[in-house]
Structures are given as C-alpha cells and as structure tokens.
Image (cartoon, rainbow, N blue to C red; front, side, top):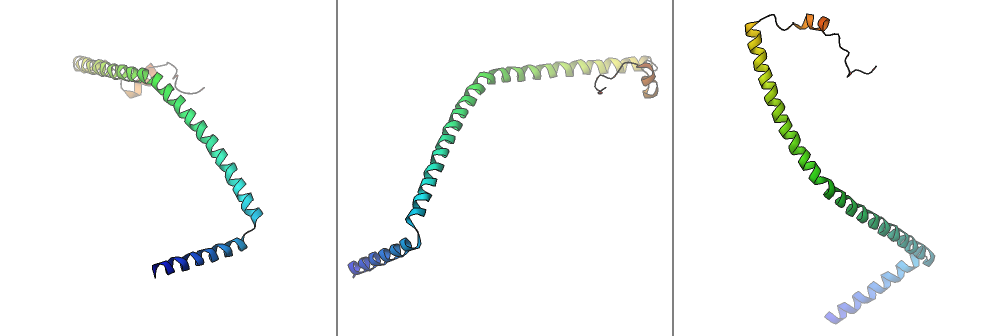
Length: 123
C-alpha cells in the first residue's frame, strides 16, 4: 500500500511538472536565469564594496576613538572648572550687590552702557 502511494505521488508530480513546462517557454526561463546571474554578480560586487567600506570605517574609528575619549574627558573637566568659576562669580556678585546695590545696571540701562557689536548676528 505504501509503495503504491509513493508511485501515485511520483506520477502526479511528473504530470504537474510536465504541465508547468508547457506553460513556460525555454527562452523565457533562460532569460530569467541570465538576469538572476547578473543580479547575483551585482549583489556580490556590492557586498564586497560594503565589506571593504566597513573594514575601512572600523580602522578609522579605531584611530580616532582614543582622541574622542580623551577630548570628552577634557571637556567634562573643563565644564566642571567653568561651573566652579561661575559659582564663585555668582557668589562674588551677590556680595557686591549686598554691599553696593547700584553696582550693576538694570536691564534698561545695560543696553545704553554696552555699545559693543553683537558678533553672533549676521551682517
């Protein structure tokens, strides 16, 4: 019984494959195969280029990562130093304002006193 099922399945598959062969032309299949080989070649070339670029990028990153980490540490320490300096300046300004209330001009007179050009504005 099992042998008979295998034989009938095989015959049915062969019949279906024969029907599919009649639906397509050999030239169309060859054309599709050529296109697939062309696409495969292009994809392999692209893959090789991307692999080379990834290796180059990794090499460049290895070269600059040390500089980035050193500069990041330097910037963090500079920020801490500047925070400390501005904290001291705010404290000094508060003491001066407590002693001499008119030492710093208010917003309305500050613009009249400060005649320096603003370097941030485009001219």
